[in-house]
Image 1 (cartoon, one colour):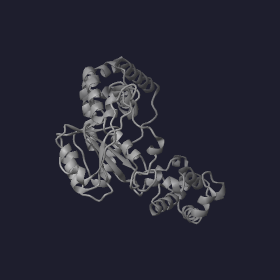
Image 2 (cartoon, rainbow, N blue to C red):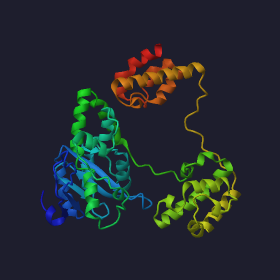
Image 3 (cartoon, rainbow, N blue to C red):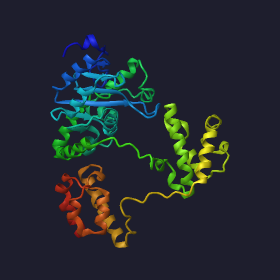
Image 4 (cartoon, rainbow, N blue to C red):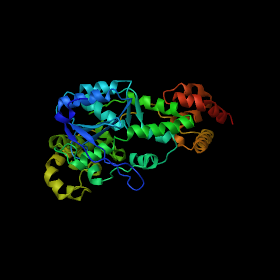
Length: 398
């Protein structure tokens, strides 16, 4: 690698060796906001067998949210990429699609969706340490807990930094060190977890689960139905839904105009209360402070008026047909199947919910003869079918 020291804001933080008496590690890193430094860093990482990946976004402060930092580390070299610098990031996309380099994440759903949304990045060969920890039978699967338990390393837990506005520039050294600490240990953590899984004979289970991560894409909310997702909307009748829709649309427009999260504009419980009780004085609505009434009162009143004048709305019908209520025999069979799964989880010392999907058990409770069809369904993994189909068949026969 050449040129990084000259073309990047290279910030070295004193590195400490983790030990029981000195467990905190402040990793050295390079902050990349220039094109040549970025390209050189990606070239260096491309020869690694694995690269830790993490992101920081600004969802607490802005709307719509965006990826504000991208952290990459092979354990020896750690880079913090500035996604807001307006660079050509296509080399990073090539790295993420390179099947020869394993991308190690922790709770990676959020990162994968954000990177696809903002840059169109897709991934090959992913490994999620939170998934691996669950299959290894570890109860506390947060990153900080895993690092303490498995590597005897402590990372910063500063709540102020957790709530930081990552879109601000320049970022302080402590914020960047905090971001680096979330990614630098991922390759080592992956190796320790993989050793445990290998000893348990479960590495293929995790491999299949992690392969599914490569299918994750960002899907924008449907503007025609997004308002139905407001927390508490399920209590509303058709008239209430008709009022909620324009209230939601007003809040959405204001959030976009102000670049502020919708909950900061108007809280969800206030929208639901107004939809259910449109005649209530806004000053009496829970969550509607005098400032909010003064700022948004006119727009809220107009939205309520439009909703009251609209015909009642119906909730969309579920895509899958609703099953009739279970019979006593079916309920008893489902209880038996749940007990089978719980006992299996206790025997293997893992969360039983990962061993066989509940939706499949519910279908089997109604149609116990359909196990072969269940094994072929998209809900059931190959490792579940290979390891547990026959024990489940026996449980259904009793």
